[in-house]
Image: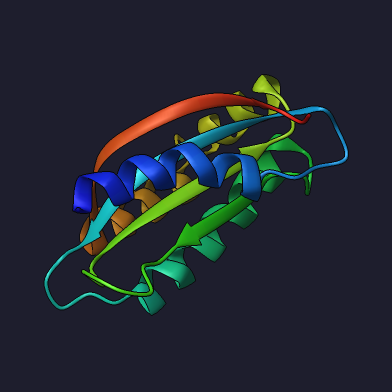
Length: 126
């Protein structure tokens, strides 16, 4: 049942969550799990820092990040979907992870959670 949930989530959510003014977006997904004693509130607070740094480096407020938390089931597993207007913005946001600020944010994420899988997608609005 859990595998079916993840497959459906990864198939459906990018199309729903990436509504934009343009006809396509870039989406990066991460399947994550909280480490013992850590909370989604802590992850969300760190993600706010990540998003500000990513937007600053990408030069656009059109970079977005979504955390999909389960309503039922294992509350320690969740999915992040980061949405970018194009590959250039994605690459610029990724380069933010190599700055001192970005490295500190990534270290905090590593302390809070483990992400087993990630994928990069191009979505097309129909």
